[in-house]
Image (cartoon, rainbow over all chains, first blue to last red):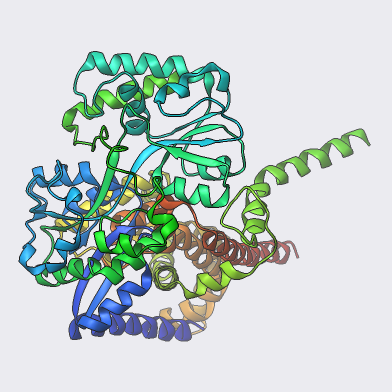
Length: 346
Length: 261
């Protein structure tokens, strides 16, 4: 019994070492770290076949999870997909390498309005992957007032029918923009006012929710909800009574972009991979699978008419005129933490 | 009589609270829609999708591989340690046992982060090896704790008798001690296996590029909404852990019966 166990154990160890050994020695390996469920898996296989590079594909759930891994220095990822404010933070901390855009000819296929954005002003470090907005999803059968402003979330008529996001930056951002301030404020007074506004609103709010907001809105449990545009597209497909609006005061619009961390040892392969994801066919496959908006001009043109012309997924320039991208708040983030805790404790 | 009914209702309520969420999860793994609010008919498509998803397949492969290897290694180390601890003098024994308890009481996140820092300090590349070592580390105390009681029950004269009858110490160990404590060892190994199977926190900090386990894969899907393939997967995992626990419990109750006889 014991001998058998031991033999089995040796066998497994050998098998494991053998497997990991041969896959790593023969081929160039590219380590990719992306959000969970955020790529059409067939794209990876196609890339491996076309370039003879083996892709190790891992996933994370939040920017902060990914940041811990990169910052600790124990990983060796070649391509990662952080959001805007995280890119800014990582650039400031020297965690990213400059990308040589000469190696990424497909970069010119990206729509110009998504280049040189605040988080990477000269576009030296990042290539946009997906983008979206934050706005109000409402049920047309339950709301009879026009929805075009954040103010409707403070309308007592809809008490007990409003969902807010259980996410501090988004919810405080809603209050800041309702008051006409910037999402990226570093003014304690403005933040204090936002806090009071949110506390005022609290009796009207049914719940602060996360991902489950989609099911709740589709199921008609609430009249109004703050959601991300990608989720809004999904909800509208399931329940045609729902509509999405970016309030006129402005909102947040966000980006997830591809960058190369300094831990990368294969910059060349990483650039090949980024370029591959910017090929029209590939970008189309990804945006169709994920359901978020692509910054790729040609891929967008090839989408179904219905999606392409949907202002939820692809808002018109005037819709996003007042929208802001998150900036890294640096140390001021602790003020946001404090305010959020106080709101939640009320 | 009234007391009896009350007892039953109480027990029933406990089981409802414990198992209602799992029951819902299992039911919705057969739901023909991505929604968790509406029931749109029975389907097995999420199970099919589950077995086609390369990401989940990879995670499953590493989860099981690490669970098997780490439970075997920690069983061997833990059993040896338990035997060593058992023969220590009294105060030394209680000292070492208390040290053994520490990792169990320690929050996972502390263990996870300190292991990550240790690996980085030692320049061990985070990946398969680091995750395996971490799992072995947190499994060992559980093995020791399940082998110790068996050693305490062991009649120490048995080993001496074997030596008197001419057995060499090694022979006596394999033929006398080991069969006696085998139930404890197997219980420990199964416990280690299940713990390794569902660990998230420690794995998260010690996994590296190319290696992930199911808990990490499931968690990272959270942003885009947990897809029903995860319900399907959780159902399968729940069932396999249930079966393992069933075996463990059966073994323990059998042991108790044997002792009574």
